[in-house]
Length: 510
Ligand code: GDP
Image (tube, rainbow, N blue to C red):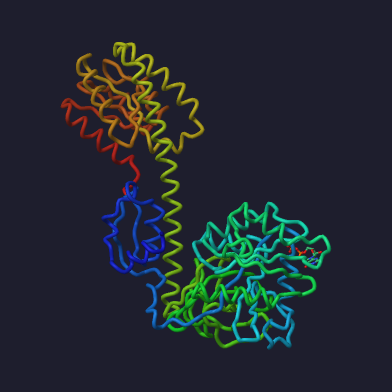
């Protein structure tokens, strides 16, 4: 299990450098460890190297169990369209069991708190459907403890009912079934529960452990029983959190308010959110100016399991983003800056990967062509290669700008066949092990000619000559057109220079 291993890692300070991404762990997985552990790493291919630690804000290690206190469960209502999710949320909000301070008009902040006569509290997310839930999951935040699955008793299990079940299973969130519309004459709750069996949701009536409550969201029937079932399940789940220490939470909604500016609704998961706290979420930060509950009342603080509207963000963070409290504004700015540059780096890395891939494909193509030509004499090869190259270049002329830094077109001239063939062999073996593609555009015997310079200019390549010369006019022409002209009479010097030119074409090492 991801989180368990993560916690183990955080507690045992494993040397992340020693992890092998390709054999043992996914790269993504390690990145997660790295981000959460708060150490900065630079990614170079699949190897990791340690950088300055602790620049990022990170979740704290698990709390000491003795500091934990019970917290309200956070509940998401899911189910098929028209089965009554919105109606259920409305009735829960308006029912006597909803928090009594009301007086004001209920505001939509994305969640509301319900208090049972016995004092227990439940936080309901009131964005029905899967959007909020999925966005949180996508960011790895576990914002929901319990899912209430609404199934209309007159309609039974439908597509989105099944989808909701799958969501719950994937996220390992337990379900309570609310069999809705039981006021309707056609209602058949038993059938609903029977249909659920096919999806491994076994209700208590069938000997399973999933609670099912018959309700009428419209009439408000049995809502207390539904709330009690939720509280009972919460007790079984032993939902607890630390009320002190730096706050951690998750954003369930974010919007720009005309008067308040960027506002978000946060569910506190750990610690207590108070006025004046400095928070970081994604790439934005906040100094909390005001906190509001769902009744539009200002509150001074919100503890674990409670949703609250936060005012004071510099920019609008996204729903699903994790919120962490940091010690100072200075630190918040640092974290945001670092995260932005990290994202920038990731983008660069992705671009780099795309280029690498393209390069590899080209290289494979190139080697395949060469292999195909291997049965030919080198003279025949020369003609064939040149032809192939010309076609390829014309095909790729639109990509030319990008390709230039990845390939090194060469024109090779030599005094005799023997040395020319030796040079070609070196080039052949050389580009097999290097990232830059060497492409011999043209080769031949004899001094460098005007035609060689023309060719080099066309292909943006370099001329290498071994034991040959270039007349003064040819040298001038090359200089004027910016064509590198390299003449050598010692073969290893020529190769050294070729290597230098090659490495200058390679992208800088990350
Ligand atoms: P949602 O799409 O799941 O949010 O469903 P809605 O809450 O919008 O409800 C769809 C329709 O079913 C509306 O016309 C509701 O009035 C009706 N409805 C919801 N709950 C009940 C119920 O318990 N009994 C009856 N008779 N109708 C209901």
